Amino acid sequence: MRDKFLKIMQKSTIAKIAGVAALTLALAMPLATFAKIGNGVVSGKVTSVSGTTIDLNAKSGSYVIDASAAKMVKRFGGKMSVSDIQTGDVLRVQGQISGTNVTAKNIIDLSLQVRNGVFLGTVKSISGNDFVLQSRGRGQQTVNTNGDTKFYKNGKIASSSDLVVGEEVRVTGIWDRTNKNITATKVDIIIKTSTVYGKVTSVSGTTIDLNAKSGSYVIDASAAKMVKRFGGKMSVSDIQTGDVLRVQGQISGTNVTAKNIIDLSLQVRNGVFLGTVKSISGNDFVLQSRGRGQQTVNTNGDTKFYKNGKIASSSDLVVGEEVRVTGIWDRTNKNITATKVDIIIRMVTVRINGTFQSASGATLTVLGNNKVTYTVDASKARIIYKGGHKGNVGVLQANDKVQIYGKRQDITGTTDIVASLIRDLSQIHKKSSPAINTNTSTSTGATAR
Figure 1 (cartoon, rainbow, N blue to C red):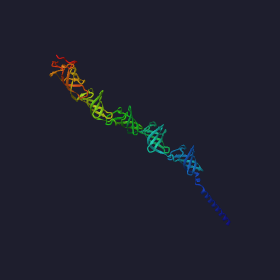
Figure 2 (cartoon, rainbow, N blue to C red):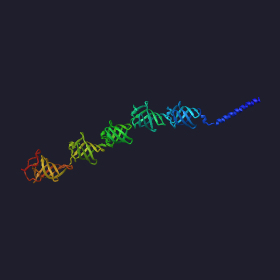
Figure 3 (cartoon, rainbow, N blue to C red):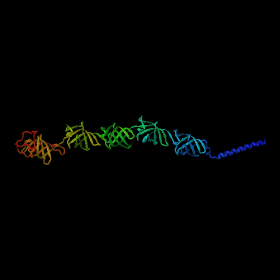
Figure 4 (cartoon, helix red, strand yellow):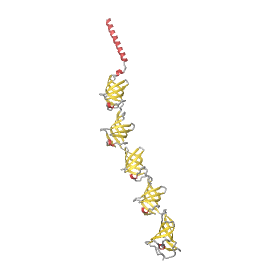
């Protein structure tokens, strides 16, 4: 019995020694050895990709991943393939580990942060059906579209051909944050009604090129309502290069379909202007105004003309004449659309010494001593000759020295005189024709009987 007991104790002791030795050996092995045996998970950074083989650098060492049968997803669940994996991506690989080889069952690419999202921004560039989005808060993103992508423009069905650089869009789709691209499921083109201010660089027909702080715009003014700064009506033909416009309409990229245009440079308002007629062109004329310089006065069928309070017409205008113009003033272009033109006849008293030339009825031609030829209306004049004797036009003879008292219009250079008194300084007392014959043309004057 004693020998049997000793044998049992001996076997037990040997077993314990063997167990301790095995445990000691196991503790002496690196922990990585366990990670490389059987099913497990490794995480690391991709150093290379070749076909379905991935080289991975993990904390526990380097691994070769066989991804041929693996299910692969991006960080937020988006589907992917080995071709999506790039050098530098961080992977979490679950599979059968044998030394440094891993037969992957599941791979998650933690660097491909893909998720559904909605992005607002403007179209920066277009390439085929794809485009670059300048997004708000996420910088530039490449938007990829395909046959399943839906396009809308202000709620109506559209297509990729409706995209315009600079246009505002709302993109819905799968976002790949790492590669900065969006696989779009829907693109909403937002045509906003907004206002732009800028300076006109050119005008062609109803198209206006405008340079604003936010960029250059092409304005379609074909259906726009247009007014000048103070409310005067206008058309595209009134707009000039350099004018400052405020344009309100639908903005699509750099194109604006204008609804309302105000030309802030065409400062138009009602006004009254005094001055003199500098030149005449048809029914229009240039006014040398007091205090506002030269203004072009445009008249039309609605313009009323008056001459010293009596109805007149544009044909009554005379260069140098004083006028009062009432109308719509365009300060920038220095013109007045006249509603009323008052011709102001101011008369000044004159005395002319000269030589009688001829008479046509009661109209006389006199060459002044200053070598200026005057036209004299003698219809209401007293005519006297030497000795204070009364006469009429008939007493005047060619080359008689005469003295004329009367009035002329207060216009520099005017030679028309309305005579009140005519003295014939050459004639002595003689009989003359009993009356003025206004239908008789006399070139030498009547001869005394």
